[in-house]
Length: 231
Image (cartoon, rainbow, N blue to C red; front, side, top):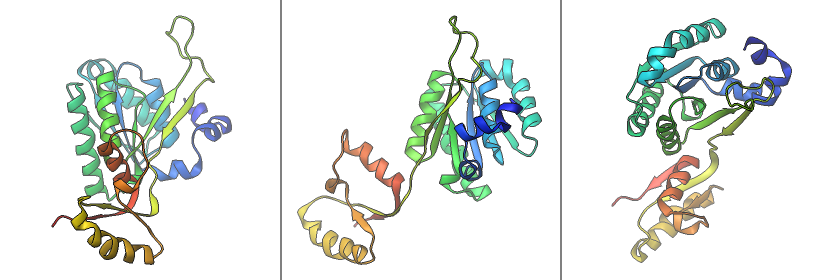
């Protein structure tokens, strides 16, 4: 694991210096397989890593995982929690821990990441939904296995990244689409923002696939500034 995290081939393939410096805290759901989780922690070498265990993973893997992370990342602060492993519980845990890190550690959303490599499927679904809602980047360490599906083949690792992107010029407006609000939007909001050289838009001005609520959440996460008309 140490060789993989320090080799030029793996580092160039997985983690750029900018990415490695960017993410200060990573949340990892934990199941039964721990080497990929240790490798992910070693690659990012974050200031903080929060481990979320299912009851089964906690009893069988906790001691080994914590020991390995402390061995390969001695400067990383490790926190942990055991949860039921249900989707809703995992969703709440990601939201609570991210809010805590934003408040107590002073991190920004762009400095947080969620790893989707380990954990029960129900935990991964909850973690991914929470990350999408909060606009936080997710990563997954993919690897090929032998013909029996038991052992990972060294050298086949690849990092799948879904990094949240903030558009510094995007101002997203949340408000009713009713005609009586058109003048407020066009003259009171969009015109002065556009005069500043920024891109101002509402969801009904966008072209997209899927449901409008999903697109609204995506634009909230992407925008540098959000204006809400709530009168």
